[in-house]
Length: 337
Image 1 (tube, rainbow, N blue to C red):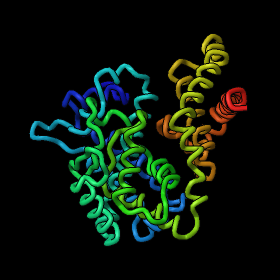
Image 2 (image 1 turned 180 degrees about the vertical axis):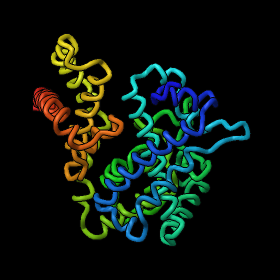
Image 3 (image 1 turned 135 degrees about the horizontal axis):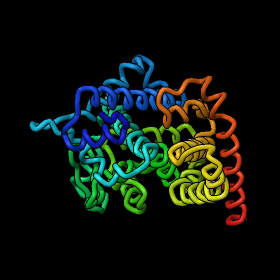
Image 4 (image 1 turned 90 degrees about the vertical axis):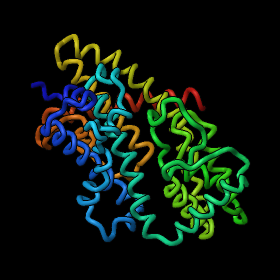
């Protein structure tokens, strides 16, 4: 039996999976979830995790991914993945899985702690009242705990806007005298006027973002709150595009040579370039992140140990990171200076 991730995913989508397929996928999702929780716990949100073991949270937070209907169909996987995804390289499939896991972890973080937080409940109640009374001036609705700003034909295919991005954009618009209806209107406007992320948001997550934004404002930290806006705008509107351009330019120049001389095959080449892109993006967007190059390559290579990374992967990876980063910076210099 073919036990590659592509083959396993095909069986998950066709409902012909085995217990071993489920266990393999659960283990992979758990690894992604735990890594993401560790990353978030070191980004200034550690108060969320003070009384919980991250390992236990990781198991709890991915459980929803494996919901089944009466016919044993894996509902989340069959909704999120398309048949055409099976034609993607394994490295890209795993990236798509990782995004699904991260989105689910974010949802469950806010749900988990929101249930224990009276102040959040008050903000949530006010958000719902504002929508019900149509004070926000826009047509929105609630569905399964989510604020829906605009229905999309292929719901769930786009990722959820990262909380940090939404908070940064909202901070730039806040005034000290704003009430929930006006704040909600700004939140809806941010979600509505972009096409990179879903036009919806979990209401508990939104309430937490609104509260943290007002706390920063009241403490006189408005400049710090607004500071990430430039970076988030670049990421959302330009950074990914320019990074992809740089990656493809270097892949055409250097990657093709590696293939020609047999230094690596196409799947290995994809792993190197996807990891290099992740590293550069992480360095620009999350410069204080604790994720190492080894941590990020581990997301693309099963059972990678550190000695193998240091001896076999790191020299080439660091070289590609430098080439792509230099091209990226040069591109920005030409476009912005």
